[in-house]
Length: 440
Ligand code: GDP
Ligand code: MG
Image 1 (spheres, rainbow, N blue to C red):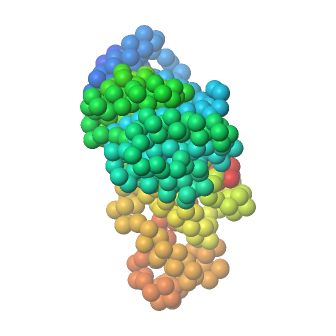
Image 2: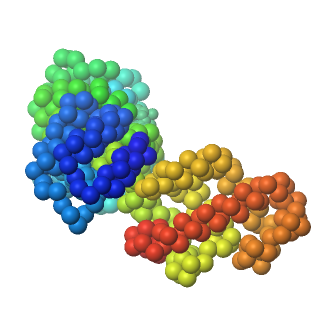
């Protein structure tokens, strides 16, 4: 996908000017990219039409390359459509602030309820009470209770035989009496939208008057999610969307569809099963992901969390001097393992598609990474500093020490040379990999 897009942009940037047929050609590719990213067809049409209107209205510019112009227009339009300003949960109401979670069964309501409660409690220092109104599945209330216990979040005691609205009223009262700031109401779902579910949601809404009604939607359900969102929004008037399973969705198309169809902001994204796997929604990053242009910001953020600041500073210094020895490669390999492996880091960088392909062709998965670290460990300090020392007999010794073939050592050295070149190149660019490791 990203290869194809950069392909067309390369072609455009080689021409002198951006004509209408250039725009059309580029938009054909953008359309294909959006469909591959699982964006709903109506939204694809709407989006490309908007871009086209803007692009055609713009005079052909001289100073900027046509490819850059198209990228910028497409990207800006997408960020605008996704909602340029990141929205968070609104707690601007008298305590206890009721937050109601709605969505289909299995979309991640209960998990997201606990995630949001944990976030409000730890980041915003709010006192949160969670209540499960799911009387449909026998284990549902217990599921939330366990999540509360695991994460130190209060849950409403379970009383058998109550209806969802009775539980909801009890939750609000308990939150008032207990001095809670927020009361989170986790509701039951169905496998599909039906009338009894909608009636139940309306009743709960009436007795609790939620300040936020968050629609929880599974980003992997693609086109279906859009219709579901529409139905819930029409009946419940949702205030925002929580997209779940974003960790399994490399394409990001659901975000664009949901936003375009409901007009409601995406407030948070679930990125895993654990209670802390919840992220704020950043339109620029999702736009980048949809367009396959790389997810630089989250790479930087992830890196900042993982990379030891001191090592980073040293690495940046070496990059500036244009030095990148095998000792550094070993450090980088270790850091890459922290960043979710080679494939993880490569997927987050723009324009690395080709390199990634080469590397996967060379079978560079994480077990290979471990072997490479072993090879470097078998070298002397001098050899790591100056790989040129590694003549045939030294290679044999290292191979024996690491329990690998000499050919593997040659492969490693070749990769090191390639990376050193890449580092040098990126190190010169501000905001490139050099900025990444320097920023710590
Ligand atoms: P509910 O029926 O809407 O309450 O859905 P649950 O909260 O019970 O979630 C259903 C399943 O999806 C559980 O196994 C969760 O662990 C999983 N799940 C929820 N959110 C995410 C997410 O963001 N990423 C991943 N990978 N799994 C999730
Ligand atoms: Mg549930």
